[in-house]
Structures are given as structure tokens and as C-alpha cells.
Image (cartoon, rainbow, N blue to C red; front, side, top):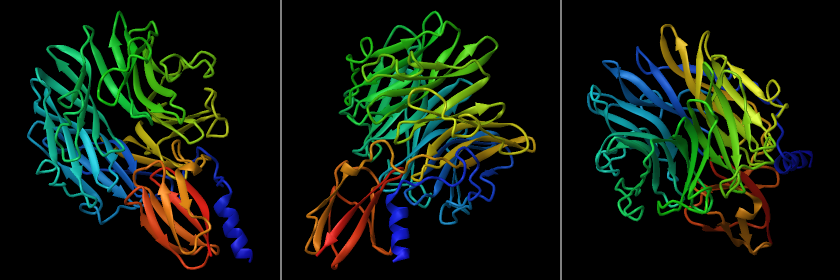
Length: 500
């Protein structure tokens, strides 16, 4: 009975981390941090992904061919050791062409396949570049069902400079990219959408490519998906100064003119160069922008919060924007299920992580008054991106010096975040009939990708485990009382089922 009560208490009560939030998680590679390379020269960690089984994929670039870059990926077990079932001893590299193949962003499909995007340089002396999209199987091999060889290159009409910046997988499996493109000598916001087989999706702006053609110079850095299918993009626009720019698009690639002014939000810091580096969307479709602005001789960070109509949310730092004057940077943002904000970047030549309350104040329970700094190796470390695990822990990636070369740096921090993520709530898991006479149905109301179900009996033993292959799954169990747990890559919810 004591064991049963202990299991129930641990299962149903919110999990509170025993370790202090913002400290290194020493269950990861013994000290919470890991650095490694793929080549004898430079390796650059750019993005990190968490699989449903909590394995960690670190991605970026390595200098493999005469100094030119190649895609590189590594997969680690949750304890930080390399996963030997992935590539060669846990590592994969992909080279294309002779001028460089640069990866900047990645995403996981619902079937576990890995999308990595970036740029293929055609002739580096001319700056000519194409968008590159690569899909890998779960073992790290190229997926030849994706455009025959696993690699798709896209050149936008009348452009010779197309740089893939970030990628998101839509709920329907389509692949959406933000692309910096110089078309007819004018740089614009560009979105490109592919079908799951790698072909351009012609239902998206008629040819798969949505270009926002304005007379000004613009550059896009990041995109996020709202739960209604609309797309948020951020970057900058070159007015008198380079100003923060946010745009919203409908699901078909057209501008959403109900957002801001004719689809745009613009903010001028009255300094030379300002831009949104990353964007995320809260559970109520408010928009978080993290970025940098030029503050005299260096760059300083800011975090802005917008209402869903494209105006500042005045409940955030009183005016909608938190502006710091420190010599720090923000390169990525993530949102917890309680709408607290995690930012990733560089602080004092170390990995820098902030945690903000939803009103823009620092969460003083995290790190040192809301901030954590991590030196991965003995000297300089620069943070690029990060994400949250299902248990709320924070994983971050970037660069760190090892000897005279740069190497991947990966760290994991403790965090007191709730288990569930923004769009995952109890209402998303439906079980009926309940009580049941033996056969019942589990419905994933939110149709979340990669949802996995585990059913436990009341002494904590696992009875069955399966992935949701459709929105509704039929289950048959013997008489008893069970706990049904549904998990996706960042979220967890559970309910009880009684079988008579």
C-alpha cells in the first residue's frame, strides 16, 4: 500500500525539481556539459532537438573539405553518451558540392525523421547560394524517399542568394522554411513550403514560395506557427535605421492584414541596427520576440511581447518591451507551458540563459536572479539555440573553444518548469467510455504530433505502450484501474480509466 500511495503521489502531483533551477544537471555527461567535434578543424553547434524518447540531437556544421562547411549531426542518450545506433558512433556528416554546405536549423517529423535546412554555396567567390533541405532517417542515413537522394535544393527565381534560416514542421507534415533571399538586388522576407516528399507545395502562394515584395530591404531570421495555422515571421526592415520587423501570414502564404499595420509590426530603437532573432508563440497566441539592438559600440538584448493583433502587450514590462543595456545577446527563445519565457544567447563570453515571468520580470528562482551563465570549456563559449525537454529541463547548444578550434558545446540545466507544454492540456486527452467494460477509446483531441501513450496499473507497472497512429485508438484491458499517460516531445498529461 505504501508503494502504491508513493507512486500515485509522484504521478499526479506537479513535479518540482530537487536541484536548483538554473544549475547544471549533473546527470548529463556527469557535469551537465559536453563539448565535441567531427573534424580536426572547426565545428559549429547551431540547433538542438529532443526526441520523444529524450534522446538529444545536436546539429550544425563541420569543416570537412578544405575548410568548407558540411552538415553535421550527433545523437546522444539522455545521459549525454553518444548513441551508437545513429550514424557512426553517434555522428553523421553530409557534404554536398565543393563550395560549402551550411546547416542552421532542424526539426523532427512525427515519424521521427530529421529535417535539417541551410544553404548550399554554388560559388563562394560570387556569394551564390541555394536553399538546402536534407531529410535523414532515424538511424542518420539519408532518406532517399525525399526527392530521390534525401537532398532538395531550391533557387528562387531571379535570385542568386538564397539562405535557409529556420524550419518548422506543420501539423499536416508540410515543411515550412524562412529564407533570406536577394531578388533583383532587393532583399525580402520569403517563406518556402514543401510537401512531405520534398516537392514544392503549390497550394502555398501558387508555387510554394511566398515573397513579401516591398521597396525596402528586409531580412527574415525566424518563424513560428500559431495554433490556428497562421505564421509569424521576424527580422528587420532597412528604414533610416534597421528596425525590428514582425509579419503575420495566413496559412496560404498571403499577408494577414488584420495584424499590425497591413500585416506588419515595426519598432525603431533609434539606433543603427536592430532585429528580431527569434520568435515564439504563447498558449493564448501572444507573440514573444527576442533580439538585439545596437547600443553605442556593442549590441544589447531585448524581449518584446505582442498581442495577437500586432500591438505591444502593455502587461509585459509596462510597455510591451524589455530593453537591457548590457553587452549580451539573445539568439533563441522558448515558452514554457505556464507562459514563462526562456531565452538563449551569450553573456560575458559564456552561454547565457534567462528566465522571465510572463509579465517581463526576471524569475528570481532561476540561476542568479533569473540568469544563468555557463562556460562550457576553459575559455570562450557562444550560445546559439536551445529547447525544453518534456520534464522542463533546458538543453542549449553553441560553440566553445577547444585548443585553437571551435567545437560543439551542449549543456543541460535544471529547471522548475511544469511538465506540460503550451498547447498540451488535460482536455487534449479524451477517454471513453469511462468506466469501460474492457474496450475503450483514447482520443488525441489536439492531434499532436509524436503523441505516445503509456498505460500503468496502480502499482506503477507499465501495462502497454504505443504511439498514436491516428487521432483515435482502441484499447482493450482486463478489469482494473489504470493511469493513461499521453506524451509528445515537450508535453505530458494523464487521466484515470476504470475497467469493470
